[in-house]
Image 1 (cartoon, rainbow, N blue to C red):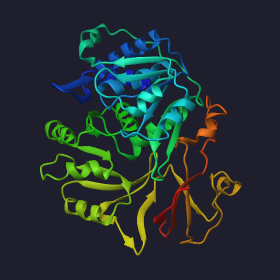
Image 2 (cartoon, rainbow, N blue to C red):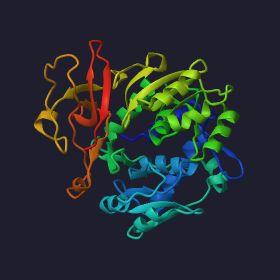
Image 3 (cartoon, rainbow, N blue to C red):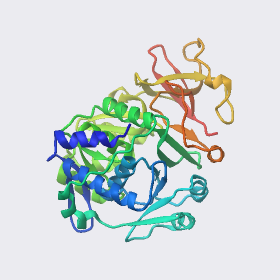
Image 4 (tube, rainbow, N blue to C red):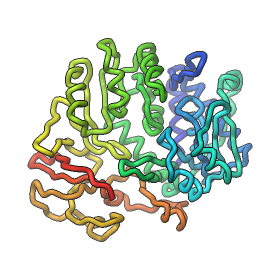
Length: 404
């Protein structure tokens, strides 16, 4: 089981189709599926030359771009485990998390300021790989040298993602090989990804799903201004991102985006009104999302009833229920049990499960070893920190968010 096999198949089906479009200081960089496949092979060989083996963890200190995504796919190819960091700002807990994960290598940019949170974390990492622009490697892409795909067990860890949570603390998401494949298939299905479309890609998981489906990914930059220019130039037709990014992109009436998924629903009322004014320009869907989309409704269906906000119906692959059981760590028998027959509009904490959802881990979990993720076939019940109820149409209404 290795996701990069999907990339190789895509490079055979549509070798000349642009896979990634990125912006560097001097110019735009466009890489076809054939070129991306070759680049990933070359970078995987570089990782092997750095003596990285299957199961070794690699901390990614790179901004989103051709280099980051190229090395991400290369790490997956050799069976290494990327550790991604989903925040550009320092976080007090970051150094503790990196110390507990014990990465064998770190990828850092050749130019620019890595940041104090990375500098302190790098001290105890044995191997530092300084990453420059892949521009100088263009001629090497013609060699077509193939790297070897490493097969991994379905329960072996494939990917780590460190995220800053709304509670103010950091959390770790861990995908096994099987969960990563399920996540990609789910995103392709629910975000209705179709080969040949151009997508404004705002997250690593979306990039992986785009590659599987054969889309062209215009990589969203940290700079809103540069991203807006890229949208005007390459005219992506779709995007799945938080409202902060999308608000600027739909500001102009000439925006090419016509299929928009806003991933941090429910939104504040002023944001809803902002998008309603622009609803005639694009098909806007509000997606209730934690690690991956769970439920969604179109902007036209958006409703509020007092303090409750309609989140919509959960996707078919997601099981959801409410429970009045509350614990500090969400691991009591009550949370793991099958749903009981609750009356309609019973208010309680939202619990979800799906085979594609990543495993959430704490710092204490890491001390017991995380080489293998063992989960039931349909996943475990995850407490979401959200309180609400289901109506008679099986739609979920969110009342408040609580943080454990």
